[in-house]
Length: 165
Image 1 (cartoon, rainbow, N blue to C red):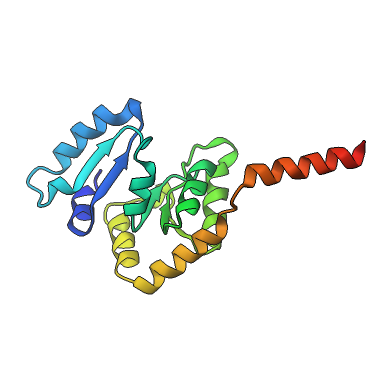
Image 2: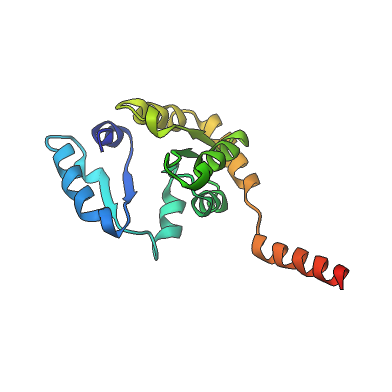
């Protein structure tokens, strides 16, 4: 939220907070945006359930945590990303996810401890001002996505089971 005034100068922000955090984020964002130009460029929502596809279709860039489901949603829609792994994730899995995703060229990683005011808006501006970089990241993101992955895993397991029988 410290970065919010700088972000809305360059972008529109749709912020998914989760149900438990929505009220607090709305209050804090109102305080952060007092006197800011373009405050109507920010909207907090609990979850993007029915609007997920529309949000991803409209997005030029996603800023998100690095849970596996989140990264696969980003990849499914082919949107460049900045990922911020949750530092307290079990077995540090979000950090591993984030760097695997970034290694493909799909994302930039900002560690939570490095998320100082100004860092996020600068990275956002860097990506959004470079069409070639956005295209490269989008292509890498799409390569990360495996259509019908669950079905492929199921088929592989069945083949192994049948071979063992």
